[in-house]
Image 1 (tube, chains in turn purple, blue):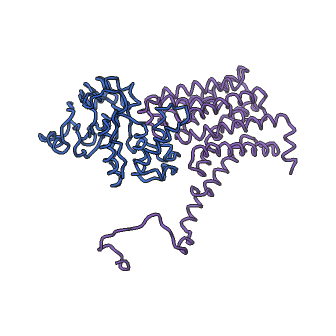
Image 2 (cartoon, chains in turn orange, green):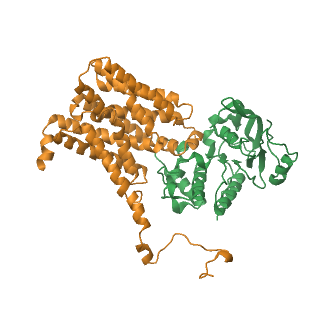
Image 3 (cartoon, helix red, strand yellow):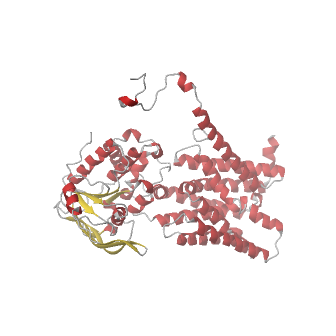
Amino acid sequence: MASFVTEPLTDPAFLRGLLDVVAVSIVAGVIGTFIVLRGIGFLGDALAHSIFPGVVTAFLLDANLLLGALIAGLSTAAVMGLLTANGRVRDNTSIGVVFTAAFALGVVILTNNRVNSDELEGILFGDPLAANMLDVVMTLVIGGGVLATVVALRRLFVMSSFDPSGARAMGLPVVAIDVLLLVLTALTVVIAFKAVGNILVISLLLTPAATARLFTDRLTATALLASALGAGASVAGLFIGYHFGASAGGVIVLTSTAMFLAAWIFAPRHGVLWARLALRDRSLLLREPEAEAEVVLASPEIQAPHTA
Amino acid sequence: MVESTAVTPAPPGLDTGDLHASCLVLHDVTIAYGRKVVLAHVDADIPRSQVVSIVGPNGAGKSTLLKAIAGLTPIVSGTITLFGAPIGTMRKHIAYVPQREDVDWAFPVAVRDVVMMGRYPRHGWLSPSSSEDRRVVEQAMAQLAIDDLARRQISQLSGGQQRRAFIARAIAQEPDVILLDEPMAGIDAETHDRIVALFEDWRLAGKVVLQATHAARHGGSVIALRRHTDPIHADDATHHADEGGEHHGIVRH
């Protein structure tokens, strides 16, 4: 059992991958929390897919994949900003149309060139163990910058998500703040896609945040828990993938989704099971229940016989 | 019940001295959504110490006029000034309480956080709250009797309590002009009475209160709007004047 944990740790590629995915998960948990609260998960997904042509182009040019993803991600965030500048931020249909086309462009670029299927698999499904030192450093630098920005500007994000009209009346540029959130999302997707792949990357942002939301009603707690859950799933996925030769990205996402389902069923107060049990909790009736409210007045004609 | 803030010798904001001098002035304001003109050529000259009710049927542009003053709806022509300065430069002097539907009530924030949001424009969005900020916030919550709810999540409050939290936020902004979109819609009697008492406090403190509402407040001023498609009642203006005292600010379409 001990060797299950210790043996991979002697492999430098595994250690690099571990450091990379844990750092990515922490950033993704925080950004994911703000995306979930803003209700723009769909935009994040479209953003993730639209970096595909950038990655493919960088791959064919033999350039750094992260650089290609970075350029594609930032320009996509800018286009989204323009498309949504009329205030209809959740105009899902046009976003879906435009950014599926971007993914299609990537596919077309790819099929016009002969590519080793392993390398294609790496782009689509990810391979955390393929991360080199430069990748890890870029993850730490970009991820650190994203985290610092979110923490510094958290009040702006909170105010413009919670009460957009009030925020604008206070003079906040709500549309610009939305675009900034998209840019930070793009940066997070860029550092995350090498680990879990372009198709699955959005799960790293949204799933832990959605899970954390089931456990707490507080913003800071949600973000911290999302980071912890994401990091936990990533570590588990990496070890399982290492020992069983499974795709680490796939296992990470499945682990994360299993956590979500477990929380959805078992989470205190917000879980399905909890709600069911609370309904049937007869023990309440055995002791003298202390209600929060009571009926103080009723018209005589509708009073029950024993109270009349 | 309500601690009066009535005795404020020098109201905050620009010191114009005379409480009856022009404060909020709309000059020939036209508001449109795209190519659809909602209100055209609106003139109003509102002095300090006024509670103004914007009344009219659904679709007559009550909210739209309020949003234009709040800077949420761009005006296509005309000017809106506060103390003689363009309204866009005077955001810190204005508090806006949005309509219920505009707020994400499921967002994880505590009541105290919501009221503290009123302090951000004042002390800056990036700097930590000062003890003065916290004092103003506690006082505002106490004034609306929600201090015992300070740590509760906004989602757990009743509609009336949520409204009070937002009005406490408006107090914390220490504004000269308070804009409220349907503040009396769907609230309990106690919240209603507290808001009415607060309007009077604000008026005595030299502030301007503008509310979009279905029911004009007794004793206040009225801006009446109507749609062109509605039949004209000759006594409309006098009716509102009877109900609301002086008829103030004529709106021409």
